[in-house]
Length: 541
Ligand SMILES: Cc1cc2nc3c(=O)[nH]c(=O)nc-3n(C[C@H](O)[C@H](O)[C@H](O)COP(=O)(O)OP(=O)(O)OC[C@H]3O[C@@H](n4cnc5c(N)ncnc54)[C@H](O)[C@@H]3O)c2cc1C
Image (cartoon, rainbow, N blue to C red; front, side, top):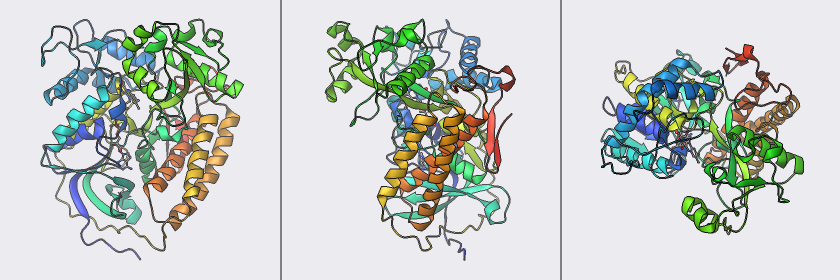
């Protein structure tokens, strides 16, 4: 029997996630109404916090919108939505300035005063001009700090930490119209699942790197937004395009730590564990080949030799140069007992960025009324088949802000709908956490081995079969036990894994980040998105 909650918690805007996208939205929306922002762990824990390079935007007279648009389209390998790219590029500079206005401190060009227009702009791979605004090599931390301080100062935003969204509430499920009216949210401190109702629900839940064994992403990146939106019936697109970074520190205890490609730019060489260099065997440009080519080569060598990692070797350079040029990397590796001036660094590629996600229009609106998606969990069409470096913070800023503006006149006239409270039923506390850890490991490993950088029809088929089995087990466990964050994340990574495989299996070509040995070439006829939703298998559009 469904009981309605006497007093569900209500708000104008319910934001799920406190990275660059969610915070940017909250800041704008707070000018128009009340915001509840829930976040899984501490407010600053997000992919955003770990962004190193910076924000790409046209910020100098030596650059142009046309050039940034052209670079983005080239990286996207024929799948970017041109109007989305144009919006992101043209609105980018104002969003960077807005960040400065709330106190973000980007590095300034030599001689420029604080507040001056003159930013120190980096050049990154794939960009034809200097256009990456940065705060040393910890830009994300500064962006997150500035946004969070501004949001905390707003009396109309309530931030709830350790609150994990479980599922979206759609009225169609209870005989009403197809509208998203809120979310069930696990309050980890009390262990209760709370019902939140909102005039607009905004997914800003970031990426899904935890779907793979190796990832640069923090633990919160388990694809919850995509999985919840899929279960609710929203359209999802282009999940086959997962970007892998070629070189991350491999160490049993260390969090995956990214080793910038600038190291190879400065002469570092990739070697097999026996010490032999291998990049020249894969590409005439050797260690300076583009990111995707290097990631594929490292993957090939690891699969061929069965080694757990390869090596990145910069010991030929003078120690003082290495320490001076890469101080953070030097310190971080030393912390794990690796002196990079004396010994090669064990590295693996790692899942880095989800180019696809929940489909949206130019303002973040999804295919379900009342549900919005912004940032990495959204598929706006900006990245196409491959993301241009530093375009993702830009995406969160531009579309987070746009969604906030678009939602300024929400309709508050309707009474709140009656929805059932979360049913605990006969669920008991989890008694065998080992089932969760076992399934978690199995899923991430099989995604790494079968659905990673290089794919094939048979690997995808194998992955699909195993994921279906694991999902059965997880579902059984889910309905029998009281929900915990671990269980919710496991259910979500299994769902995202299933969707990545479905998207990948339906693309019969190699394009951008999707490479399959069964169709190694680009097929010009397939320059279209892969879309799917619950009950509608993946297809091109
Ligand atoms: C190591 C690294 C370096 C990077 N470098 C760059 C760079 O230089 N430039 C660039 O443009 N991009 C970079 N990126 C990518 C970029 O950081 C991200 O794409 C971007 O920050 C995503 O922002 P977001 O707001 O969409 O999501 P996130 O910043 O990931 O925030 C997601 C939020 O949602 C919360 N959340 C998730 N699920 C739930 C749930 N169920 N309930 C409640 N809360 C939930 C999380 O806790 C988190 O607060 C990098 C990424 C990494 C990992």
